[in-house]
Amino acid sequence: MNMSGITWTHLESMQINNNIPLLNLIILFGFIFIAGIIFCLPLLEFDYKKALKSSLFIKIFFWIPIFLIFIGILYSSGFDRTVFLAILLIVTYLEFRPKLKKSENKVISLIFFALFIVGLVHLFLLGVFFNKYIVNLLITLCFATALSDVGAFLLGKYLGKHRLPEWLNNSKSWEGVVGQLLGSLVGVLLVNFFVTPVVTLWIFLPIGIGCTIGDLTSSFAKRNAHTDNWSRAIPGHGGFIDRFSSLAGSTVLMFYFLVLTGLL
Image (cartoon, rainbow, N blue to C red; front, side):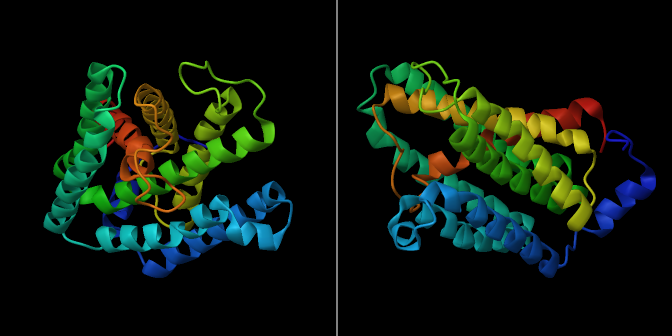
């Protein structure tokens, strides 16, 4: 498999596929959703009554409204996406502000939040610099980022034995970090083969590494602020910063990967 090869025909196909059939996305999401439930059942001891009351069950099923919002954004105009991003930035600031007061070191918290905002702003830059391919890039980025987080969770739960340093987050493991990269690769492969061609399969690396950086810096900042979640705005997922910290990291590295490689 040639992971790095790209041709003009491939680029033209990416442009044509800016109008991605909705059915393709729904089928892929449905497959991932069902697979996620199957992989999580052993963690719930196959106890369906217990599962219905668990936070993990809530987390899994709340991916449905998240996916629906993603679809709405994907099929919106560039202006609408920019408005949504602006609203998201405001919401995350309102979420972050009360936690800042509880921080041991406010400088650390402010640096984290500044980097988080810079990361999300790169979503706008993707649309500016790579407008012809923006739909394909958003699909690749968001699916790979989501599966990166899922991979980290599953490998951490099933195989996690080597804990990260306590100052970072010793409830997470190095196996989870590996899962972050593998999940990103799976996401890129699924998008490439079932939805739309990706610019290169190697795009999984900046996405996976970016997810890891975004997630771990958020964990570090939360420890500094003495909190488990930035808020409880999204049931099962925590706050908006919790949900988008991986995406902030993956967007930055993906953007500069595309700029530096000149693939588009």
